[in-house]
Length: 426
Image (cartoon, rainbow, N blue to C red):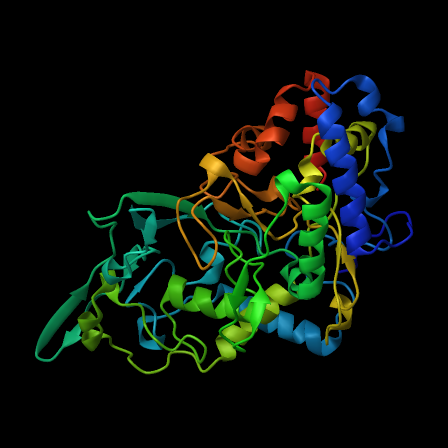
């Protein structure tokens, strides 16, 4: 496969891009109530950085590998696809409680996308503090189990977890697309820290917060960027966490089994108590995600170009940062590349749209800005899939996203349609 390139544009640094859009949007937000025509006309501002160019990495088709991979890297990608699609068996360590038996069950519409699979998180708020109820299986439900297994002279039956009575918070989480995550992984922490500072300076009401997390694989404190709460900092750790929590497969970085419904005594019946994966499977899955290309961009039309101006004008780019640039990478196809995820990968207080779950320093109302690329490949939107259309997703925005929601609602119908055309082009 080859990357599809469009017209050439001068490169921008991430900080410059952030300042350009955040400054422009903050100014326009203050002026805009009903988005007069001149604010979304050709004179409304330069939107070249919202459209693809020869400097921007895009894919050819959804599910394709990055362009420019070496032969060895292609082989690693292919091995990753095989691992991604392979179903785990009980004698390989599946379970004893799990969500699905293969990565592709949740991420194969198309390859590397999301099938719309919803998972359940729960917990309990009491006196202003959140308890994930880990002793009762929280905060993530594993809704499958391996069933009956030999136990001494008889059998023991593992059963799927359920939300316990003690929980007063329950939410769904949509499995996320994996497109282009190698590029996200290769963005230096400093770029995201600088972006957070730029947002605080130029758009303080919508500023994002970096989620500083301890990377299990290295022990280093890093900027989280993967997951709905930006709770993982690297793709390798993201992969290992998924193997454990989604399939029940232990690995060197995650060697301890989940206790079914929080009852660790039940692990004495675990048919494969030894380490399930020596690390090869996790690495292969991480390789697949690392070298999976970002989504292709749709063609530019007058509606798309007008929609890009509306996107800037009503404040969407305050959080959905259009362009980022990677740092050094051992994979040349990822090294010092500009790409367009339309996310700052920072946490934002989303008010009532928050899911009520605390993970690390991410509070109950905090959510990572969802990348907008590949938007039309998703069957539903937002963290819990409540929105069936992009327009509905915008209208559910709250907290730091409330002003953009109000601005969208005040647009004329033609301007709303232009914005939606732009979103479909991502």
